[in-house]
Image (cartoon, rainbow, N blue to C red):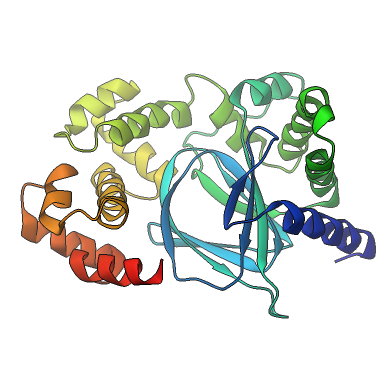
Length: 297
């Protein structure tokens, strides 16, 4: 890492440490969230929304389907569709806390930026909805200026849109134009699959028919299956299962729900199937897993 980049990262770390008082800290800058972890932790299952993730210290591994994506100070993570993932964060080699930030993607702003750039050829199949890519100085610098707004709150309303527009421009110039175009343009394959994932998230408790989902996406059943897996790296059934199990785990921990109650609440007809799926995903039966997590809170 070149010296000037190291200096930029060190300054950004200082700002994050000053403003992040918990593992996940929303900020006065809309869409910007700070992350600080004092210890390396076991995988956290969460639903990622379209965003950019910058690691300032330490590292992170994100698992989706059978794929794993590792990000550190040299890379950034781009997510272009809602995805149920498992992520594990790591402290820095010197023992210092893990520091990161995320910024939500703005579909309207990105579409405006892409309209001003040379067009990219539309791929025949949509790229996966997540990728780790090289973090360049030209992309890091506007993120540093965005962080500086935390110490200048009076400037947020005017300056933030200008910096975020530059960030979207820099993203488009990193060679990810096709992926970003799929996210920005209505009618793209990614947009069509996004309609289906949005329905699954909102209706995960209900019966699901692939024919209805494919019609919703405007595709044949065969095309829908192919494109859905290309984007999410899993099948529609696997996607729904992960969303269901994440919600069940939340109920077990935050609401202290019984395992049977949680399983029924998220749409399972069979308690044994719920327990099998839960153990496969989280490594322990529902009651045991919840008891362990509650003890660590």
